[in-house]
Image 1 (cartoon, rainbow, N blue to C red):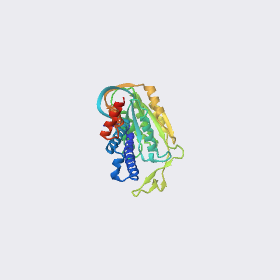
Image 2: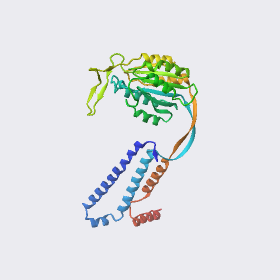
Image 3: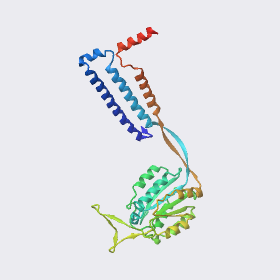
Image 4: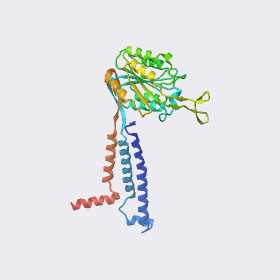
Length: 348
């Protein structure tokens, strides 16, 4: 069983609270009667009232409240299957995970801010396939092209500076790995989004040439420059004891700045665009809309979608039935209730 709104299961806490109120009410009623007579005389003072029936009515109310809380949570079980034709574009995101991406010139740091922007982009996707590559000295495929955004998000959450071996930022290798990640050979409907601070970009990986090769295959390459282009930021280092210092080289603290030049050249060589994110709270929605407008959409293979059947109606029906029983049930003893019915029949 699954639930559409599992957070509403917290409403079940109202059931024990309501039960405690019933217990308190019964205790107060019994204490009030005890003030007027001893316990063995209470039955004579209220001979027609059945405590067992009162408790049964309370139990019916509590059971109905439980069923209504479960119904509001949207229970589902049982499955139906539907063939859905997928349409969209293919986007591979290449994310720089070199040590310089830990600089805090954008909160909380460059890498975490880039991950947040990618996560926000997932909410905008309209059936598009998306893949993830991390790179520093060596690119690594973290998630193949997929429309399972939950799986992509799980891979993204695990990304840190250990997600690619070696140091530096080999942009060219990252672009070539992204280019080779597309699963079909058609030239259309493919784009690469490369996010980096451009720091320590090794021109020996020939990033501009790699972008031009991608363009020859019909791909667009967009680049996002993240970080402060003027002053930059220091790179934090945390030791085994949790003490926080700053990266030092040759006795000097290392400052890293956004170097947009190579990122701009890459975007220009592959008919894409460069987004100067800088230290602002940027998002990738504008780039995504530009990709969709320029590339259009294509049909992917159809996918069999499993849909869980909504079953809330059974819980609602059960709750209504219990409340109806509670309403017609009297708290009189059986003999007294029968006498009242007979009196009402005779009067009619």
